[in-house]
Amino acid sequence: MKTELKDWQIARIMFGKNTKTECKYVSDLRKNIIIEHLCDDWSIIYDKRLTDDCGWLISNDCLNF
Image (cartoon, rainbow, N blue to C red; front, side):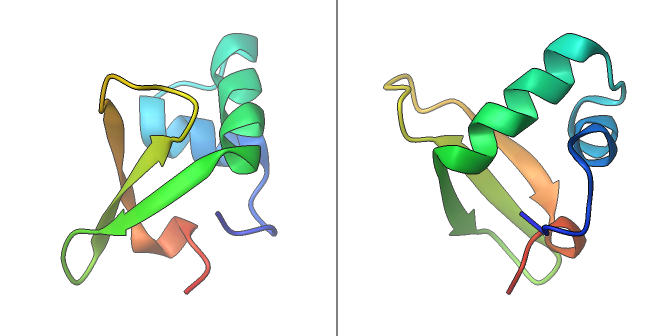
């Protein structure tokens, strides 16, 4: 994820809100992330610690490519 974006900014984009819980999750996700390119403007990010194949759709504007 882009280092110039704060956790609260990414949480707002991903979850539509940026409470303490979402910000903490983004902080943890930065350390354990797997990125899968989906299409021109979007990617899916996964937490490599999870095994349920749950991912989040995120704009490539939030990622360093």
